[in-house]
Length: 120
Image 1 (cartoon, rainbow, N blue to C red):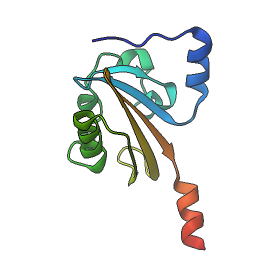
Image 2 (image 1 turned 120 degrees about the vertical axis):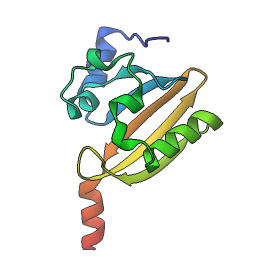
Image 3 (image 1 turned 90 degrees about the vertical axis):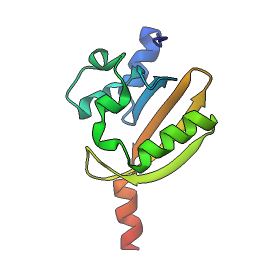
Image 4 (image 1 turned 45 degrees about the vertical axis):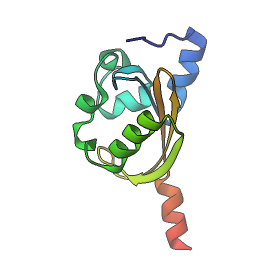
């Protein structure tokens, strides 16, 4: 497993981003996770590095997020989709960025936007 290392300046920027960001290797082991994502589970990011993503988020197995991550890993294709939260109530937009070394998954809370759309 290749752990992603970043400079302290870049790490500071990534940890200030409110979107949930996680990178996994080709075996679905977490190589990077930002603070926003780790906070959902009340862990520090360093406690989650090296763990299998499906062990960290077992309620996701069998859901759209599970299917999209697995398909993106298999096909090495970008995926963008919306879904309802599993661990955090709300609506989420997720983008999956594949690479030769695995995937980076970025999820953004779009609950306010969805509520505004419904009100219109």
